[in-house]
Figure 1 (cartoon, rainbow, N blue to C red):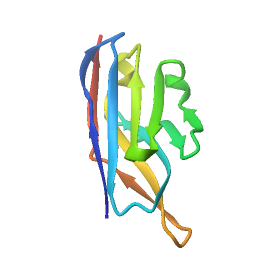
Figure 2: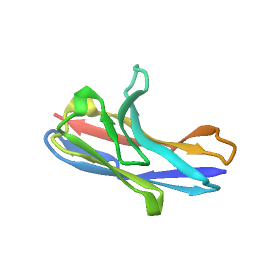
Figure 3: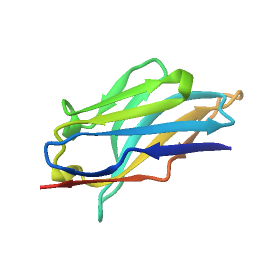
Length: 120
């Protein structure tokens, strides 16, 4: 089994910064990609940013230029540096890892979520 543990959420004023961390542990054969998603009240979960094992990144348009995703393959960890935060960034942020198996398949695993609240 695989566990993802997140940390770093909290309350911040608009314009401030937060850094989210997520570490994967357990039976990990190989991590194909790690990323962050968020879900605001009454809205669907959406992709924030993702980074592949090779280091390629993709960001939601709403966070480009403000958020930076990074990854430490040796630690099976992913980070999200969030700058210039806006009230609309308020949401529960979820870490995701797509983990492969020796048989060529992959499965998605999720963290428990961490609340980010940006006050105006």
